[in-house]
Length: 141
Image (tube, rainbow, N blue to C red; front, side, top):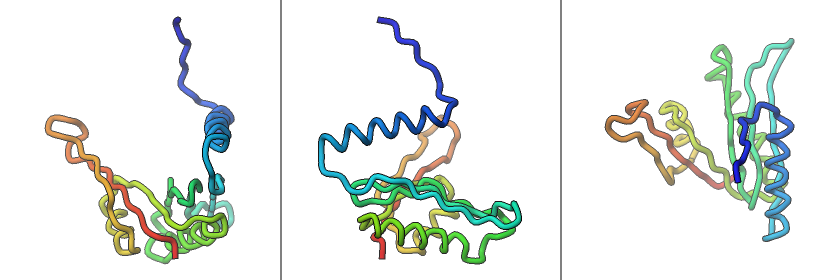
């Protein structure tokens, strides 16, 4: 059988895929609260930063934590993380995990009490050279 497979460009379809998977998993095994956590900080139309995450099986997956350059080193990233952690605990989460390929972000997360549990690296002659992705986790206080 030949399958017609297209790249998804429609957010509605992306959400439908994830929702269908989560619905199926709910039927197969006990679940925690599967939900999204989307936070944003903006003033007068200026996006200062935000966080995107999901909760599942008692874990918060931190997908995106971003702060615009003019607002860095002022505590906004920490405030976003703490707000997401509070929401995650209310949904039954006990830990948070993330991955990053930014060495500076990795150092920040390590200072925040994260520990590394995995690493992917490009080998010799594999581009982009010297690229690594670190996987980190920590309990939610």
